[in-house]
Every structure is written in C-alpha cells, then in structure tokens.
Amino acid sequence: MRVFLDANILFSAAKPNSRVRALIALLTEHGECVTNAYAVEEARRNIAVKEPALVAELDRLTARLEIITALITDLEIDLQPKDVPILGGAVAGGASHLLTGDERDFGAWFGKTVQGVRIVSPRLLADELVRNGLL
Image (cartoon, rainbow, N blue to C red; front, top):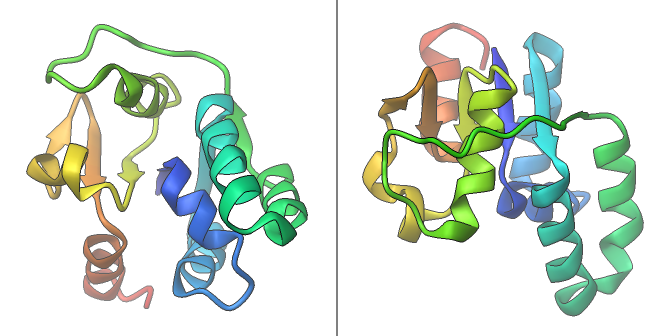
C-alpha cells in the first residue's frame, strides 16, 4: 500500500494525539506514505495560521515521508485547480490511495479509483485496513 497524504491529512497528523497520526503510523508499518511539496506547503500555511506551535511537528512528520516531485495534470476527472496537484501527485507518484478529508472537493470520488489511485477518507481507509486484517 502506497498512500499519498493530502494537506488536510498532514495538518491533522501534525497533532501529537490525533487519530490521523495513529493511522499514519500504522500505514508506515505496512506500506509507504508519500506526499508532495504542494501538499506540505498548504499544510504548513494552515498550521502557521491556526496552530503555529505544530509547525515543528509537521516538519518532523514530512521529513519521514517520500516527497513526490512529478506531477500529472491530465486527469480523467474534473477538479478545482487547487486539487489537481494533489491527485496529480498521487497518480505521478504511483500511489495506490489518495488519503484526504476533503469531502467538498473529493467526496464524490470517495471509494472510487481514478487513474489507478483509490480516493479515500480516513474512515474508508481504516475500514479497508480492518478488512485486510491490518487494523
């Protein structure tokens, strides 16, 4: 399992006692977590405004992730321009999953596979891990 982490997931995972952080820890035991600079910078901007004390936690988390530098912009679905680098990074990085909490922009695609990437919420991914005996 190779999971691309969206900015909102990085934001949540920067909180030391969050469930998302625990999920990321489990994922790294059984697979890989990746992201891209676009997602990291979006998470950093939001953390700096909303919870500046967590910027260092975000930096520690992202230092352990593979940062995908490639990007595919020719996607099979229509997305807001701000979301293209997220799905495009997941596709280019060979991710099996895109983990996002963004129901507004990705919710219609939750549980569906687009260009080889299954788009999932934390709940959907946790359910999949349970079905596979990993959680």
